[in-house]
Structures are given as C-alpha cells and as structure tokens.
Image 1 (cartoon, one colour):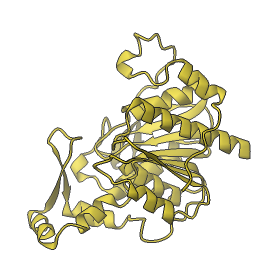
Image 2 (cartoon, helix red, strand yellow; image 1 turned 45 degrees about the horizontal axis):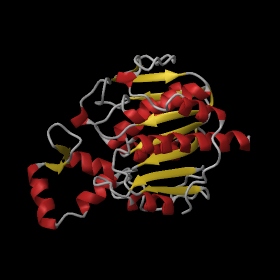
Image 3 (cartoon, one colour; image 1 turned 90 degrees about the vertical axis):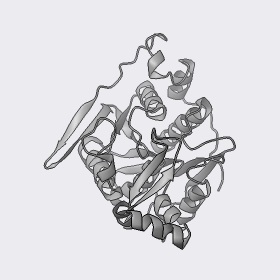
Image 4 (tube, helix red, strand yellow; image 1 turned 180 degrees about the vertical axis):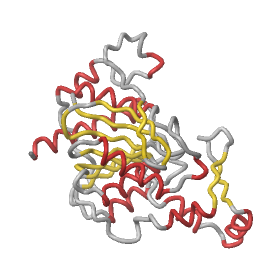
Length: 290
C-alpha cells in the first residue's frame, strides 16, 4: 500500500499550524486561544442510556471522532480534531459510548453491538451530510461497522491503531488450556497500561457477542477513501491488523501509513499532526471531487 501523498497544506491546515497546532486543554487559556470550545450535551433515547456529545456545526464533509475502549471524547486526538475543524469551518461531532466518559451506562455491561448502535444513532441524529469517520483502536472497528451500515453517510475513513476483530482473534489465539481457564472463571483479564487497575476485564458473553461483529473474515463492502495509521511499536494492537483491514477493503483508494516510533495511542505531537493532515488531505480530495 502506498503512503499518503503529502501535498501542500491548504489554508485551513496552515492556519491550524500557525496557531501552534493542537494546544492541550489545560493550556488553552494561557495561550490566548480565541476559539469557542463546544459544550457537552446529552442525547436522549427511549429506554436507553443518554449519550454525552460535543458538536460543532459547519460545512460538509463533517468529521466524526470515535474513541477507543475505555476512553472518552476528551482525549488529545479528539480535541485536536475539533480545533482543526473549527479553523476550517467544517462540522465536527464527538461523543462517549454507553458506559464511557460522561454517558450513562456501565462499561462492563457494554458490547460491540451496543456501541455500534450508539454510533449509528449519533450519525443518524446529529451528523448532516457526508462524514469522515476517524476511529481510534476499537473506534476503528466501530468505524468499519458504521461504514458498512451507513454507506450514504460515509465519505471517508481514517483508522488510528485500528483494532478490528482484535479482542476476538487474540482470545482465540490463546492456548486451549489457557482459554479453558478463563472460560471457567467467566472472564478474560488482559494486562494494560491504559487502565488504573492495570487490566481490562472481558466477560465470556462480551467475547461471544463480539464474534457477531467480526469483519476480517470476508471482503469489506467499503468503497470510499480509507487511510489507516498505525505505529510499529504498538504493543496493544499489532500494526499488521491495519494491513489485514486494507487487504479486505473493496475500496481502490486505501493507504496504510506506518509510524516507526508510533505507539498505540498515537498521541505524540507528530502523531496528532499526521492525523490532522490526513483528515485535511481527505477534505481536499472530497471537495475537489464534487
């Protein structure tokens, strides 16, 4: 797969960089940032948990950010994309899945199918026109599921450390004896640096439900432009998963971008600049095609 072509920056991206690019939220006031940050709102659904979201209205194509497992809409990547979209005048939507961040619900009771429904609800209710979906880790998996379910809403995809099928395939790759031990215990504990407890806990019911949403067993009916960014030093989700995704996609416009020193969260300044540039490049491509 060819790396994304680095064309000259458009005015919106140049303006974003001229202001220092992304400024962490804790430094916003000290830097004299003049942009108005979006406020938290809540989407109400009949008999379902409320979903917290932030929305910036603007022109199309819009950008929607999908965070990873246990993460939320207030991370550095999500904040940087909002600043960028505001600088360019494009719409932007970010939200917390059920059981995540400021949304209602319990994380341990969530499933891939539940979070997929969250994504589709938010796309249907709050995303006007075509969207560039940016998914991080499990958000990259949900991004693919959303693109299949809502092709008319999906203008392009940007996956960051995409974890498509990863929970299922990782568990299935365990030795039989180890799997049986976890099955008897009723949950699979996975060591992680991204949780205060030092582990993620996945119930057997979660894993069985996730199997229903695996996407890498057959061609992926996604034909829009796709960019997959992954770090070679990702210790949580191997970079070759992004290669597998690229091979399964039906789209003829797919680039895999590998960061030699990139880690799973891809939150270093240069990682975030690459993500923002990639989105900017897609906006340029999509608006040129119209």
